[in-house]
Image (tube, rainbow, N blue to C red; front, side, top):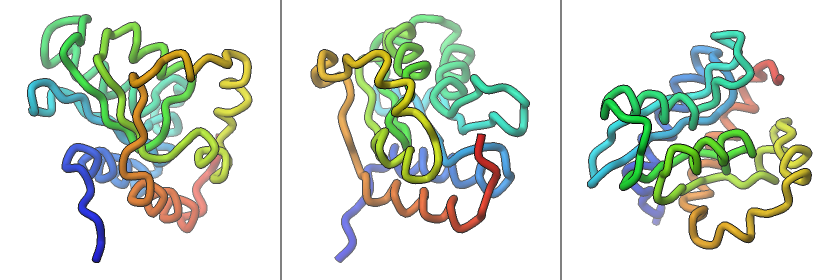
Length: 156
């Protein structure tokens, strides 16, 4: 029997899937949730927008800020298909998100060709974040990563 995927993570996966099939970028989708309602969503658009900062988390944070008309996302949580890179992790903290749920780990990101671990090693402090980062539905996100690899998309 297949385990049910958290509904918000499932939407993040669908967001990422849309992006990879449009060749927008990597398999990274995210949603921002406040009081059980999605207030922001996004996926990686690095290739589409020729912008190395247009990661799924950044896109979802920008969308949530616009929708809520605020730069302060206190009271919100983020669900993302991959453990945030250092840039996205700092953006999550800068936006005052209460919690981040991620599917695939930094090591999984490396397995499909991304180099987050290289940058992450420069900071070496994720353990200090306590329960701010929580792994969720990794197996469902790994299936998405496998789908991405099967498409033989351009890495960056």
